Image 1 (cartoon, one colour):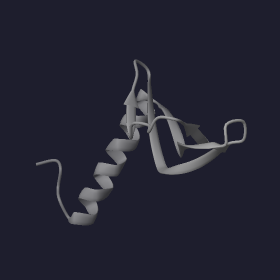
Image 2: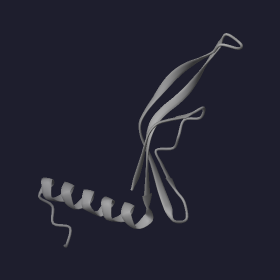
Image 3: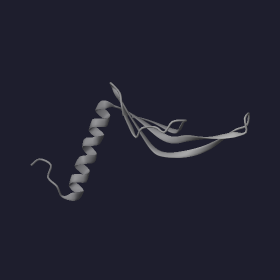
Image 4: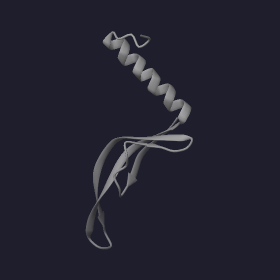
Amino acid sequence: MTIYENVRSTKRPSDIEIKETLVFKASNIHEVIVDDPMTEDSKIEFEYTLTEYTKDEYILKTNADVDFIAMELGVDLDD
């Protein structure tokens, strides 16, 4: 897993993007207004944290999250 902080984009990122071998998860997405000193215009960009997982890492993480939620709710997933 690799975490990239303060990533910026002119397009709002997808919450999750699945590629052939990697999964990208964007979180803490917020708009940032950026002034362009050359044109004196401002534009909206998006700043966020991007977490990159291998597919295996993401599957293990998702399974662990589901198991934890089931335990908190008292649900037996083996039925």
